[in-house]
Length: 400
Ligand code: 0PR
Image (tube, rainbow, N blue to C red; front, side):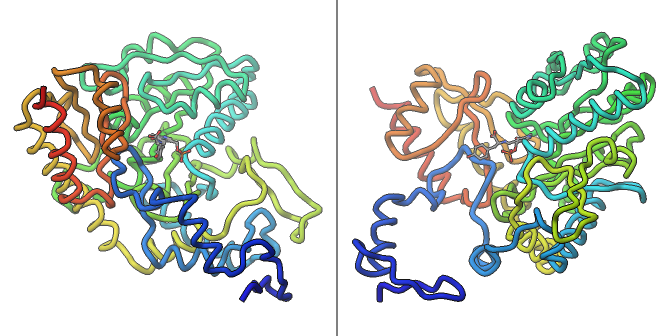
């Protein structure tokens, strides 16, 4: 039984390890339970459904970096992008690509802002304006693209301060970034106001909806308000949306949708030696997995809207359950009223960093964001998880 199917050939390669079963036993020891997400309260990724796991094993060889070899998967990619483009009200001339996630999409958005402004406005030494709440991927993007950056302050509601953005705009500004679903609390910036500024000053507005982009469009169907963050705001030029967050598609999976093919032209590269000699790419990565595209296609197109609505509804319900529990836990203070499934709290007994360390000893994974402890209530976090967590939290807070 030490043979393994290597596609066309079978090879005996397991020399030290006698059987495949032994190999998986060893992997179980090496990796433990870490893929279970059992006590993970810090992650914006979650367990992919079984169907996505099966897709991962069946279609692992597909490489969208050479689209000529996988034209059928390219067709699925188009359909996934078409689906995502509708979530953000993209205009007819839109263009987009599947990426490895929010960081790559944000880098591409900033890249487009820089090159578009170079072309249209002749700016060579550009500056880009970020909200202080923006993800670290923008710090990387500015560094890689040699863009100056200004990180502007937030209002009391944790939205970017529009007046501060206005003050920051100067003749070298190429773009503004707005966030639809911030990493720390899930808030949506006032994209309409940013869009108006972008139009007035002829700036490129990129919206990072990596997190909120697959939540906000569904909220009105669940009885909440859906904030406007897409291309219905005329100044929006590009939007990032991740598929490996609440949707539960395979890691790595994200996307960027851009307003027009002309914008994409400013960053696109020809790769004539590939099997389809007309291949153009504007992703940062060359080789790209097909698995996350196939999984996203199944989750979005086949499982349909009820699948995602149910995931969001449950996550919001568990969020409220957690909020109610935290409210009656002594020595705990909520930092903000959650608008989606991100909760922030602090405590009056010890430093947050020490509380997180103590909880870590009990197996819980939490993150400290700004000056609060952040919990992201993803679909793997159930009411039972919350009950167990609150029990451990109370022991630490109420003991001597
Ligand atoms: N934009 C926003 C608003 C984000 O929150 C994130 C990721 C990104 C962009 C970047 O996305 P990628 O990580 O896909 O490149 N935010 C999560 C965070 O920083 C990422 C994460 C996910 C962190 C799972 C930890 C974890 O276990 O919290």
